[in-house]
Length: 103
Image 1 (cartoon, one colour):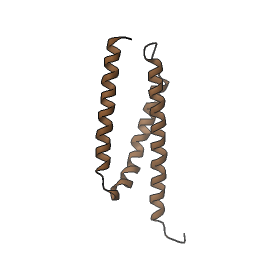
Image 2 (cartoon, helix red, strand yellow):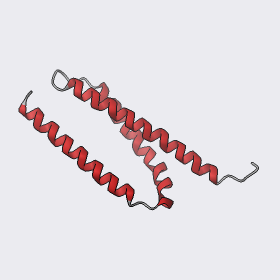
Image 3 (cartoon, helix red, strand yellow):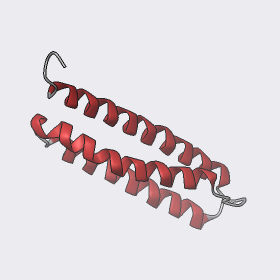
């Protein structure tokens, strides 16, 4: 494998791990009263992530790293889909709390 590709892969992996830690810290600091409204707002961002993941998974990446790129794109599609569906379920549950009993 090309040393430049290995350096790029290590750098991208480093960025992914760093973003994961920062995201976890940010989400864990959000009070429970704000978590549900932020979740519904994050659905739009997850939709954009899903479109980007579809573009990456479907891109013709050539010979070098083609299978790895498609695998990472597939994983991104799975996670973004779970996030979008979960966000919609949480938002729907939150909106059910505001409906009047009897309607």
